[in-house]
Length: 336
Ligand SMILES: Nc1ncnc2c1ncn2[C@@H]1O[C@H](COP(=O)(O)OP(=O)(O)O)[C@@H](O)[C@H]1O
Ligand SMILES: [Mg+2]
Image 1 (cartoon, helix red, strand yellow):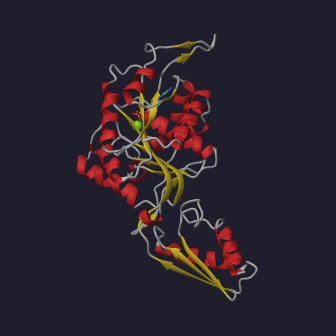
Image 2 (spheres, rainbow, N blue to C red):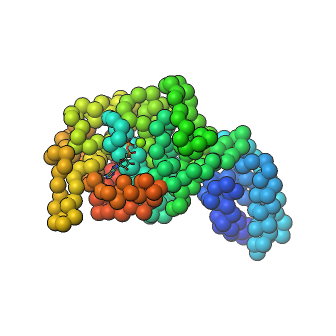
Image 3 (cartoon, rainbow, N blue to C red):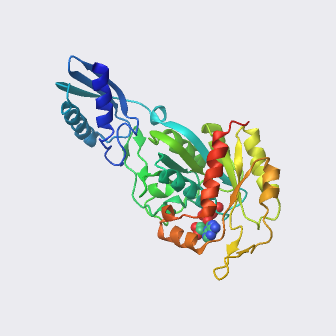
């Protein structure tokens, strides 16, 4: 009987949103325990990242909601402290890498996250490109995250993707960060440890280009499910991709696959594919990585337009669907 009421309480709290982020106390994993005895409900919430001025409000909201339920006569709500990292429950973590900048790494990270969100999965993006963050712009985000001394709350995109990026923390979008390695590593570690990600099915990490301090930090600190490497047919040698793959292997991180971006152009008149930058290097790169080619993205003016307008979540294409399906498949095969 009590177990049944406890279940009802959990269900009801799926509807109580955490102030500052449009996800519930259950989704943010703030609900620590529910106990019902003789109609008396005892709820324990973590106060993590909740500003003190909103804690009372949240307490009231939860107590009121619980008191309305049949089988509950009384409800008390208490707060406990917990570290954000202890509350993060993430099923799959995928980092997106590239040998050099401008190949569409952030784009692939953003599109994959959007595709997961489209399937009603709980998704987050950790923008680990501290000095060149581009995720907020692609999603049209410019609000500052809220939080408390105990943690930071991510910002939500239109389709409900949690985002944390250096760009959201800077006073203005045009500000630049010139940081050396150790500080950058510290910022990335904080994005992982001090952001309240809560319960997520997928976290996508957008890495800066290359194989420097930032990717190294991510591979050391974050329990990755795997990495995806992005390249373009313009990349002169497979060497840069190999370097990234070598780094992942050394760090015991699985390479899920490679994506070729700007692979071809579809001619509007004929629908023919034109390989503008030369023949596809997809198979060659896949071989060099000993990982599958997840797919090829065309140069698509629609992509550039949506990125500029901050509406990347709207993009749909067969090429993206294929990359998405292959990524899911790679994540579901235990091969290491
Ligand atoms: N396939 C594509 N078609 C059209 N424009 C693209 C494509 N890939 C990338 N772009 C454009 O290039 C820009 C840079 O891509 P981005 O993902 O930020 O590169 P990276 O993260 O590797 O530095 C994007 O904002 C987008 O406007
Ligand atoms: Mg980028």
